[in-house]
Image (tube, rainbow, N blue to C red; front, top):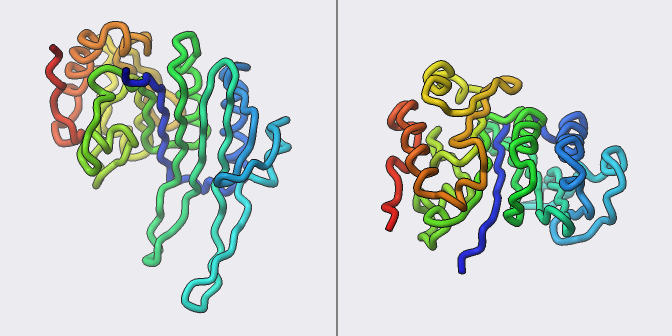
Amino acid sequence: MVKKEVRFFALTRECTTDWSVGRRVLRAFEEAGHQFVPETLYQWEDKIGIYKSVEQAKPYWAQVAQMRTNGSLLEFPIGLRWKRSRSVKYEAEVSHTGRNSQGNIIEGRLNIYADANGKADWRTLGTRLSEAINSNVAMMHCFASLDNQACRSGTPESDFRSFVVVNGQIPNIGWGMFFGGDFSKEVDQNAVSAAGFPIETIGNGYWVQVTEDINDVVHDFAMFSKRRAELKSLFREDLFLIKGESEIP
């Protein structure tokens, strides 16, 4: 049986190493409900300790590591991970923004992998995090049914599962999407609202849902898939890598 899993991904050009970003992100977890409060902090696979408060995590948010390459000493910020094993079980990790050798920005990421708890308030968590990290684009989705079938690496389906944006193209629409930055220009708010899709202005962009309830992905995937196709038709055709919907038996 394929495991059902809720995943959230947010991409940002914000300077995530700044503690003001870390404070907003961790507060968003607490404000979304007690069931989302982190329990244990990690750097890579090393356990740092028990999460006690937002401010207690400040020294670990963007600690600098050093590595010597070709005689040069390089410094880079270490991403922070945190887990929760009770109520809503999840693992989250932030990878900080940076620059490549040409000086171009490498987007930061916030990834969450969680057990599909049908009673959790995933919408509140998604909207708060999208704003907290000043996301360009973010996705909250329950991977179940046809969206969670085995696929080859490097395919649009694989990009959807890990939310890889390729040359400005989004892999697919998840249950909840945040369109910020340049992506906010892709949203026709009036058309989305008129078609009956939940839409809300959040920070510098729009939070859009395929349906009111994320559990629809599990309980009525045929309906969800139909509505997703309708929502996708309200955007320009080449915005998404996956154009259609999988055939439902």
